[in-house]
Image (cartoon, rainbow, N blue to C red):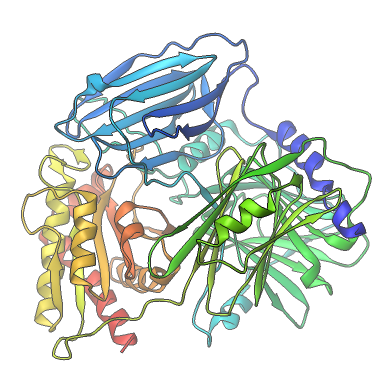
Length: 627
């Protein structure tokens, strides 16, 4: 009981520190969250204006693709970009993103089918909030949630060897480095990196609606970790963007708990430092373990007692030994569970959503045989409604239990081969538990074939993709994809193409090809772009856990064979085509068309062939390893 009652320590701590360290000015408009009404015809963008005044909003239209967009001046988007994709409706996508940080401008971009009319979009202001109205049903399928926890699984043989790798030089510090006043220019670059920015149409050429950009270190990140501090018997980690962790691992000799933070860039002022945790002899250290992954290592004899806790705005992470919580702090913000929703995503995956009346503070614990989420400021739920919702889901063993005066615990027993992902809504008022079955295995139905692949050349037809200096992304992607096709066919692989000419299949049509052909893998090929012309390099994106190994192998070959480029790393990204396919699927960004030097290489036959050879080699290695 004592341990449960004390867990709320983090509530006040996180709120106070987030306010103290925030980079957002108090006199700007804050765009907080995005909601859909039950009719799927209205979109609500909640805002908090400092003076309660009206916003000056003017809609604009663009073509190729057909879009409506408007800017919200003097505004900051709290949390990360919101990206919604729609099926079988005239509205294809709605993106809310931080367009610029100096001055702060939030941009809303609505992408329509080519035949849809922009006049059907109405933008209204009601009680200081923005309402987007459309005349037809939207059929939203995009991801309203952001991932805060995911399992990481390598093969059984090398998983713990992988965890033991921590070769960075450590410097001991008795007082943690605290750097709240980070250089303004760097903060702006980091903010640009965190937010998926809508490209400006500055030279009369229509570019992709949404592209991701990087910072001057040639990294792209979802979270900029800028402060590590031992405080109130725990480790406070604070930054900008979207904090996320992977399943903790426990090592011995010495006894340690290891927590990785994917898509994270660590500020050099705290990187590779070892901080003493009081007078206990315990230490914490954080390093840039991979190009875009941070690693937290806590040296302690009580590894299983450390609990990671997320602030509702996802800007801070507090890791604390539950035996050391103090009862001096009690949360003033209470919430109730008021909704339960379940959905079977595909034959591998089930998800369960809980909604709350107010933002919830979440603690997460992953054991080998179970997953537990602690809703530390929740006080009530409806057991019967919860049971009714579970009866229709594939997660019947999930349990809720009320912890007196502290919150609600959700437990989910798991077999070792299950994979967990835990998401939270941008406003902190909903969470989603996603449970996936074992990794799909290659099908290999035709024994005469070495394997089968669906290749997807990005964009096409009226969708030019990114454009620079009269060069179209859609042309480069088709050239490279056809080269990959030729290499694989020569090696005896069966290859299906989502397009073999200048046609423009929809995202769903590309997915349909994959679901119809049931290949071993799906590979989508794209060219990247940025508002900053000095950004360059190769990225590989994956979404489902069973796609990670394919991404690692293909990316390895790309970086090895093209040494002149930058390794921008692996990213878990919810692109439509790699999210909705049910085989291992990746999306390769083979360079930046916005970088003059890289664009000059991307149009040469030699470089395109080099990229195609690398992708093909990765595909061959992956499929061969699964036989």
